[in-house]
Image (cartoon, rainbow, N blue to C red; front, side, top):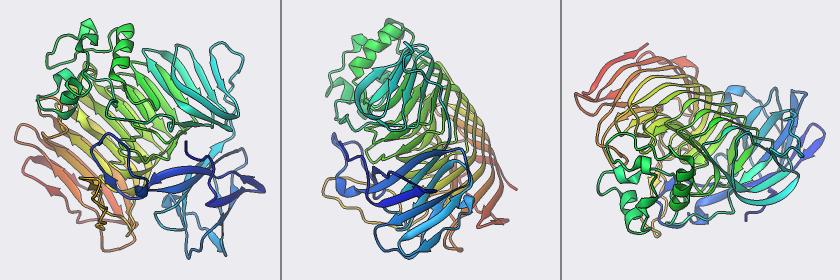
Length: 518
């Protein structure tokens, strides 16, 4: 287990000192196809976070820093926080609840601030439907959720555990405490998600691994899913059969995994130190994440919130710092009788140490992915694509909006690299990640044999902030062929350091139609 507290910073909120919590984070954008063991700790570093609640905003923070520094940046920049420095002490005021990052050392050893509204979650520890974690450390292991269940995690609680839900309804997970995934060590025996690998193209690495390394028992697939047609095997149709299948998959036990669930709300909690995908929903309806935070994600594939073939979901008022995609809408084999639709992401702060900040794809096994909105978000650091649609499968991706998004770049930003062996070291190449990327393709991440389409997509009021005035990130739009186009794409009011760009440059290929710049 990692240590609980950090001595990098001492923090006071008003007159009260709040404890500084430990988080291990990625030090460099150096990723790898999972080799069967986790990253070397030399690729990581210590960071810290504080979490508090107040009913009287604005509040003043006073932060004492251990080491010398010459300047400090408080993000998001859109909050326009003017910090004052007195020796090794930083002071500033925040006017409202939210998530902030204090950077006295540039990208490294940052302090993350989670300022919560004062809230009584109304949980009764004695209720038979409530699982109550009070102050202290709890070694809970893997917990299967039930219908009408409430899980409460006190602000002074650290729960070493993971939550799984299969076909459950009306569940609440709430509180300002920590769910820590450090109890679980992922190996090559574990899979990230329960999917119907039988329908993967021949030669797919995961398909071959299941048939050889794991010697996966295919008879465990539910009878309703035995068909291997190119559409929808419904591996989730029977709850009892799927729970047996889930055990056979030996999925990574970390964070929260929901399968075919409905009406689940997760509010206030902090996810830390996940061993794989952190908050995954597959084939679900009406899932809401409100004021959740993710920190300490340094392990391979530690995505933030992933929605596979889900509908009517929302992520709001939340913070994500992940070592892979932060918030992503997808489609996957075995769940693709359902489309992905009506998903809204708003008022979130994201920091992608690897992967994409706000994305659709690259798994797009669904007939449709539509009605997706990313709105009013701040992207602090980005080492891959920032606003992205990666179409690797058959979905018709349409009716998508990215609007009122603020994207920050620094001259410390480096290009993400793939590590090919244990002996290879990270060699930084300083470059900005693409701001916008739309791409239809058939490649290593493609999982069905049909191509898709991207159309009716709007990027509006996108504000880009860079330290160097002359540098601006790329915008890439690429269709696959004449039958699989990117078309009807609108780029409206893209600004750079507060000034609208009137001659916006877009890199596109011949399989794009009707690209509008306003």
